[in-house]
Amino acid sequence: MFTLPKDGEYRNELTLDFGDPVDLTGTVVGLVLTTDQFPRD
Image 1 (cartoon, rainbow, N blue to C red):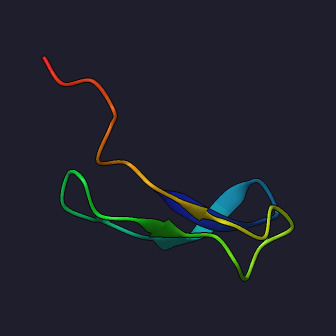
Image 2 (cartoon, rainbow, N blue to C red):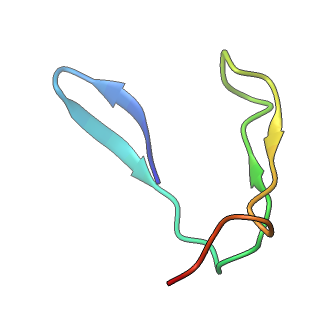
């Protein structure tokens, strides 16, 4: 996931394992996105 956009580029990259929660509480969204139920191919 790429975050912290500025001047047309992203300044941060976050890599997580499949199923790990994505903490977005420090963003305007303000939530934790659970990914353990996402479909896999």
